[in-house]
Length: 171
Image 1 (tube, rainbow, N blue to C red):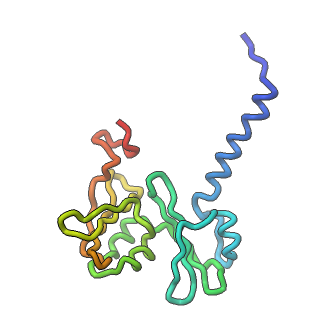
Image 2 (tube, helix red, strand yellow; image 1 turned 120 degrees about the horizontal axis):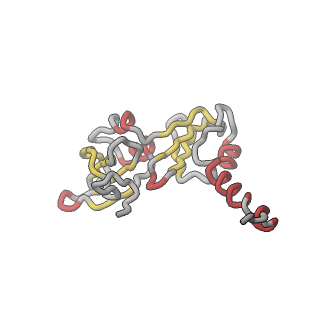
Image 3 (cartoon, one colour; image 1 turned 180 degrees about the horizontal axis):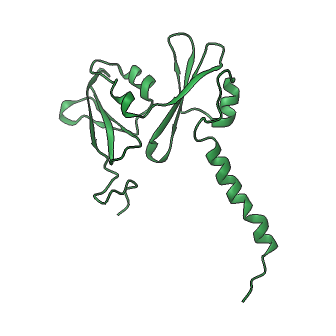
C-alpha cells in the first residue's frame, strides 16, 4: 500500500526540526570570536546565567548549559565589552586548581554556579556539587564553611546515576 504525502504534514515537519536546530545553535559559543561585541554574544547565546566583574575592569559572562549542568561556558569581555576569550570551565584540570581557603566569590568566578547545593550537615556550611562530562559517573564537590570559604574538595558518585551506568537517573 502506498501513502501519498500530506501537504499539511510536509509543511509542518520542518518547523520542529528548525526549532530544534535554533535551540542548539546557541548551546556552545563556537561562533563567538575575539573582538566580537557583547550584544552579538547575547544575540547568539541568549541571556547569560550570571555576570561577574573581572579585576581588570572587564566582565565574565557565565552560560551554564546542558543536561544537569555539565557544561559552563565563560566568555571574558574587556572593559570595552569586546570578547577576549571563551572556555568551558567544568573540567578536571580546572577543578584541580580549587584550594582550601579560596572564597565563594572566586569559586563562582572560576567555575560558575554549581549544579546542586546542599547543607554541610553536621559540619555546617554548604556543599556545592558540579556535574561535568566524565568517563565515570561522578561529580566534583566543594565544601564551604559558614563564612563562604572553601574547606575541602573531593569527587563523589553523582546521585543521578545508577549502578547500570545510566547518567540520567532513570531506572
